[in-house]
Length: 289
Image 1 (cartoon, rainbow, N blue to C red):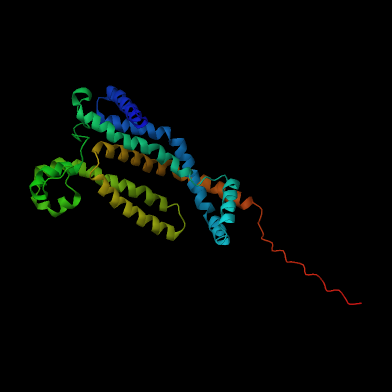
Image 2 (cartoon, rainbow, N blue to C red):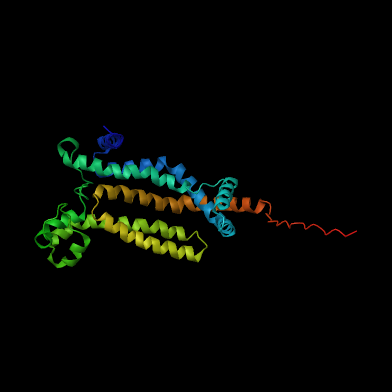
C-alpha cells in the first residue's frame, strides 16, 4: 500500500468512526470539515496576520523593486533582509490551504469506496436531501440527454449540453438534479465571496478591481469544474468555505486590524534609511617647482 492509499484509508476510517456516531455520511463529511477547520484555525490566524503585514509592507517592497530593478542579485538580498527584519514570510498564507488540499482530493477515493460498497458502509446520502453523494448534476442529466448527445465514456452531460438542450429535459430530471445544481452554484459563489470580502480591507482601488475580476473569473471556473465533481466533495468544500466566510466576519477583521497597527508601528519606529553616494576624491594637481 502506497502513502497516498494509506492516507485515503486513514480518512475513510475517520469518516467511518464519525458515521458510527451520527449515522449519516453527509453529516460525517460536515463534521470532518469542522474538525479540520478547528485544527488549522491557529494557522489561519497566523496567515491572516501575514496578509495584513503584506498590505502594510507592499509600498516598501515596491520601492525596493523599483530601486534595484536592474540588479536582481541585490534585489533578492535586500528583499530577504527586509522579510527578516519585519518577520514576514511571503508563503505563510499558503500553508492552511496546502494542508486542506490532500483531504479534498482524498475524498474522491473515500466517496467512491462508500458508494461502491453500500452493503458495508450503508447508503451514501445526506439525510435524503442529497440522495447520492457520489454523483453530480451532469450524471443525473445524462440519461435524459443521451439520445441527443450520444454515448459518453464518463456518462456525464456537460453544462453546455444541458443549456443547448434545455427544452428536452423533463421536470422529474430537473427536480432530481435541483439540489446538486444548488451545491455547484454554491461552490462558485463561496469562491467569490471571500475574495470580495478581502477587497474591503484593501485601500488600493486598482487592487480591489483586480481582485473582483479574478473572483468572478474564478467563480465561473469553479462552477464549470464543480459540475462534474461528486456532491460529497462539494459538500466538504462548501462547508469549509462557509466557515471561512464566518471566520472572516467574526475573527479575521479584528486580527487584521491589530496586525496592521503592529506592522505600521514597526515601520514608523524603524530608523530612516538614507542612500549616501560617496563622491570620488580627485587628486589635486601638484605645482611645478
